[in-house]
Image (cartoon, rainbow, N blue to C red; front, top):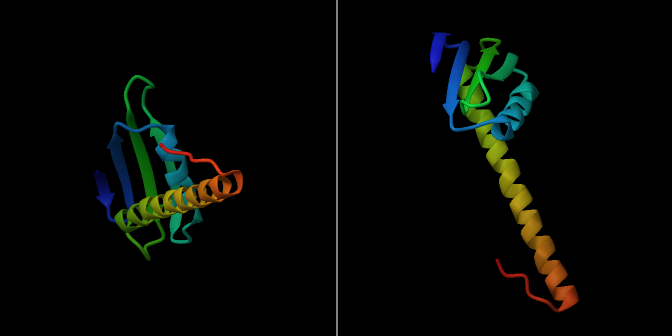
Length: 100
């Protein structure tokens, strides 16, 4: 984390790319306490994502980042549960088994 103050922070996340960065940016943009957010990847050969987060002052950038990561996690859990339910429903209707 590179910080100027608690409300304007740049986070560097190693071993990640657009797959994580874009959903996190989306969640940050939905937050009304975030005034600016963006991310950059310095070079495709380097797997480092830099998130820039500025808040309105009602929430720290760390809290906004944490909240967005939790939001992405919640969405992934929901998708996983929905997929499992649909697979179970399909198996029951088709009389088949789908084992991993």
